[in-house]
Length: 274
Image 1 (tube, rainbow, N blue to C red):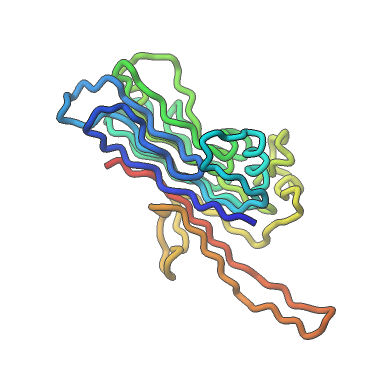
Image 2: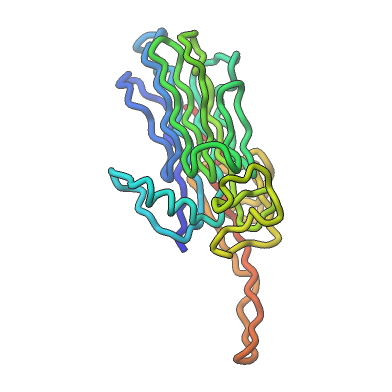
């Protein structure tokens, strides 16, 4: 098995006006969108978006995602081998236009992530790019630049209309969804054509699954990955905590007690625009 710990998306604080998009977090967080027409002047940063966060997952097929040239077929095979995924949050944007959505990045989701306004959608079990957050949208005519979306089981995504209206792209990115093999409400990649959850289609084709699962979105209270406290979402790079609750005991050759595991996956809750 292979553990992929997603990274936090990069904040947008460019004063050089280089128009180089900020990076999304490692494990396919979306890049921030660029505002190519800065009406505030050179002493202010561009009205662009921050990068989305990268999800956290445990998968059965390794693929090196650091390569310059990605083989999409091999990548999809690796993504479809994930048996547990924690969705990550989207990046914020800087311009305070609230007509089409909020400027803050939206959190990673559970079975589905929250949408931000009319054109920025949270990933769910069947919608959004598999394992990737969509890049933010660029604005060449003062439309602003949207925040990159978070990755996850299915990443957050956007569907802006063709428009040159001021500030229409000034919306924070959405988050990606989560997945746990065996958790009711999830839809395994093997059942990719299903549109509704059933008692069967949450189980991964490998036969590996989890029991007594609890899934939290990035705007809910959850255990801290670092201590015994309770936090609301997680800000920072992705974290996975694996706790063995009981040791393996084998009193005879033919009989062993099971090993219950506590798995806590905490991806980036959301990106912050500085």
